[in-house]
Length: 387
Image: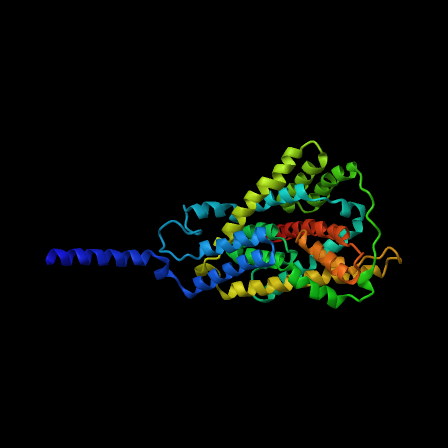
């Protein structure tokens, strides 16, 4: 009888101890909330096709990061020596963003921008959201470095936001990265109402001149000149701008097709998987859920809206100085934010609603790719002043 009792006691004690290691025991309401958000991201990416290449890794990463566990098992993303912590190194040290920029450069055609350089101004105007959010963040009590990391969300460029945050405010990485990628994915939802509100029926049907043909020499010279011009002014943007223009030269040179294909294919896919999964996993409820995170999400939304407003309003203002026949359709003003190519696609789709034969996509790609350069330059400026 005593032996049976001892066996029963031994089993129940070890079952009780085992239970303390399970997620059921360690789960909090915060973990449940974050798992629900992760499932929502996955739903949006599959059902609505909102940036699935980003939202599925991030959403699944949220699930991974919010499986509650007992500390000391060396499995959490913030535990030194864990596998996830090693993978997260590429985020925290800013390794992944330049590699993504290399792939973006290798897949980007700058012809629309080269053929109509004044579209660069639209991409520059859209960066106003970054500095507007920076000012608002300062007023809410964030430090200058934290405000800089938050402000870059307005550029709608996830890799840039991650790179700058890794340098200025690593503690805010999860909130800033999730905010940036969330608003990138919601471009088709957020921008159209603003575009319709700010434009007239006459402006929406403005027809722009077809882009001129761009020579191969121009395409080859653009990344070289672009690198020298931007990095001589903002050397701190070199990791992003250097890789962006290098990737584009691989594409346009015509003699490094294998390298360009690798950069824009397998490499960027691998890095996107690692970045998305680890950024999602960094949203552990114990460190992510806070009033500070909510403020960052609100400021991020504001900066994104302001960036869209600034782009559309700038085109309307710029048109005052352009002759009839040379005017720019203000519907492409939204594409100054660097969510490539989604914001340009939104310009095109909204334009077709008012004129089925007015194709704005190629025109919108000009400010769209300019926005990529502009956000990297803005990040370089903030990094130079605040680091």
